[in-house]
Image (spheres, rainbow, N blue to C red):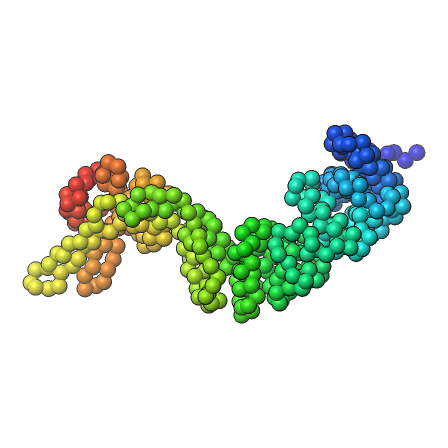
Length: 408
């Protein structure tokens, strides 16, 4: 007698356990919905591979069955709209998704439904998930997607192109695909737009609809430029920053350009703005941070040289953005770029001492001042070397002029 493989009972037990959990979910449903789910499970296990233990390599993968059970729960919740009895369903296809697709169409579609819509049954039972599942039943009953409860306005052309979206995309991406193609955009542009945040969200569609039209009307833009453009527009119009009033007081948080519009823009100018914004991104992918002046004055001193030769000019200026800190840190080879958050919270101010003569201008010293105590807490030359006597002389003149104490 051939010994029984230990893997199969274990896999079957895991599926049985998942089914029992699902039955626990429907226990709180009405009797008809609960009975519909039990019939679904019984027939599916008897006639198909949908609830048979799938293998990933040489191991049992429980996620496949859990996904199918989630889909069966969703189908059972629409039992009142079933068009055919479950007993007459015959599975088709070798893989799980094609088999499940034939089940969903058997129960809820009298007309052809795009393959990508099958995925809506795996989204659970949230309000938004049931809304998308309603699109499946709407099209399956012969309805036009334009008359469904869509999150964006659709034309006849868009509705036609929506039905031709690739099978592998989500329904949200398909909606964006149909919009782009319906406006006359190419398939490559439709793919590029659907791959951005616009293929996942439809918030503020009154604005994003104008962006999609702009992209369609500027075919000279490359596909690789689409996502950076959309991320730039999102950052400028919707991502809040801490703003400051005219006298340097901290104000409310608001985006840099909350009223940003696509009117009057050219593709070339927009991409130039995107490129500049990307250069301003910090090392962690954050937009450039800015802060107001501290109220401590800057410094300028002309120092003549003996013999009537040209003298030199010493300056100390405040650095007011994360971009300026990065430039200072790069030139001076130290870590002052990491002080941006301290500066935005007004726990630190950073200053750059420079000297200019007939040889040009060069950075000399990076200075930190505590704005609360008005103390100079650090002063560093290149590579974190300490200041030399001349640096201390100039630093002392500035500190005396501004009422600062030097503790470094």
